[in-house]
Length: 461
Ligand code: ADP
Ligand code: MG
Image 1 (cartoon, protein in one colour):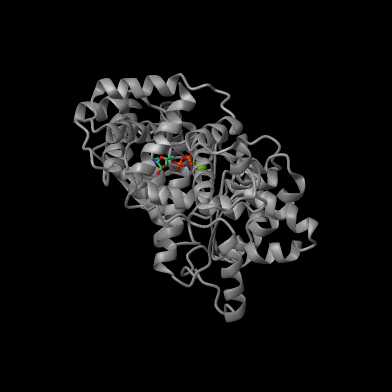
Image 2: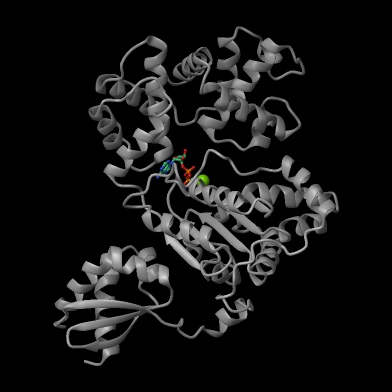
């Protein structure tokens, strides 16, 4: 067999054993560059892929080669230049050589302009410092995504641009992309690192069109040094914003600014997204994130209990990790409910209590409404419904209102404008601040924690 054929056969075999995303990310552009005396040299397009193949897929590669009847004692990986780009890729990328030294910061940011951006940024969604690479637990399922994120932090705007993470709900996409943003901001304090959820981006754009400030909107995002866009699947079917985003993307990409995106599916699978965007989204590094395995889920639970009074017995940790398998947000929710339940009652968490808490969550009405949550909160604090959604600003009204906002955010994952709307507020920043404030206070205020738990319990029983 020719070298090419050998390798194609190996790839064919490997392709069926891996997820599509992993295969494309790690193997698609590999080739066999040399084969002599039991030594096989595999050509890869960058050092990161080299490292991953060596560490993670070395055994699989050797096994598969042997299966093809190839004698092999050793496999070496060598970084070679990338395969020729297709015409479409060339058209998509007019950026200069990727080996350039990373230039994260715009060379001459006008001082005044920068300050203005900062203040605009204050009103916008921003990075949440809670999400760091340090407190992200790495294991099977998310290790590749994590490694890619580290690579981006080390060399932004160069090789993995855009970085595109995709996968199911609640598996840590937002956590990771925000963590990259935080790490980059930390390393480059003057860089303009922007994080935006696609839904928010769309809303801002619509507002900008209405206010005839579209060019200001465009300038703001195009002046980013790092642009992080969460849940890009929500661009689907929105022609005008797609057009806008396309230009923003090109402008940043051409200037070697790092772009990071998350989505629930690979670019090619987003319906109603034009091909030119699909090809750009997939033109860097796309990684398929999987649900973390059991051991990783246990480790996540352990890190999330830090800072709480109760320590969980291993059997309780394992109970939770084995009962909630697909969504870390849910796992975290169940854990918090368990801890709060026990703290309020002065009990030590056991598997029996955990079972009870899980049972309660299972019985959740699927169609819990915002109104139910607001009513329940008002009733808990014995204040009239019209007050909680009305204009009053007394402390005994404001705090319950903030708590209701927090619960709407936690339980229904409503957007800030929607939360503000439900509570009769005009400005979504009120909702944002309230959620942030309550989240923070919950960490130290036991009676607040008790109140929130009780309100939630009543919602679900
Ligand atoms: P997604 O964006 O994929 O829906 P998130 O990033 O919002 O998911 O994650 C949901 C929750 O689970 C967050 O609170 C996040 O901190 C947590 N989480 C997910 N994966 C991990 C992990 N590997 N280590 C620590 N926390 C995690
Ligand atoms: Mg998310």
